Image (cartoon, rainbow, N blue to C red; front, side):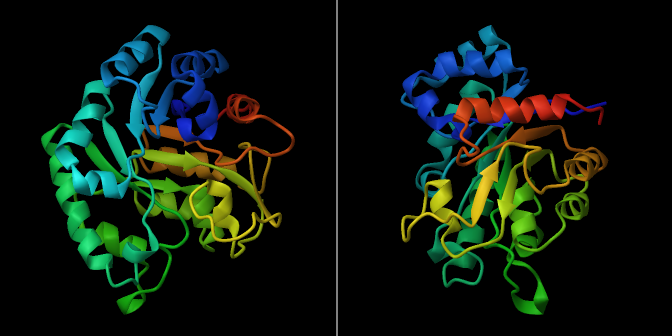
Length: 269
């Protein structure tokens, strides 16, 4: 049986900022089962909870910044508990707290604290990777694997695009965390890793945007999604989430996520 499919709202962030409820309605009409938030766009959490219920979307998770969670874990997590999200994911780490940096082990301790507070509020904390966690640390261990080893309470939100960019097999990496991979991110791309590819995710602003790397709707790039989806099922995933940081192929963000859901619904898996 196919897993339920959600979409990361960051994929359509400008639409959500202009009209969150209307965007949620469009997402439901495309055939998505759930949503993963990336900010609340100045909306009341109780209103968002009610909108999801009225529209028929499951609020499965939210990407919440490490800095915000570190500053006020209890209050920040409470907002997503109100919405009804069973998961919260730390989506990104700045250079000063990434694996291999001077602040890395301190960040690990912070994430432990955040995981404990999330558990106290009935929420499971996840970590969403990019490629920079695939740096070899002591004993030749990847930073990402060290994070999961040092924090047993932390579960994975494996972004299959960034695993591929880092040079690892996405399906194999999902299976590596069988029983600890409730949500798997589906993201497609073409091209190769470049020094300035992070300009495309709207965070780093250090260089011109690259043309050698491009995010694509699911099924329109180089990822082996039949293998990834089989791995997600084998690993015990509860959800898969479509994410496209930047539209491409001349499509709007909404058109891009519609292409993704149409692809995923087009074959049995």
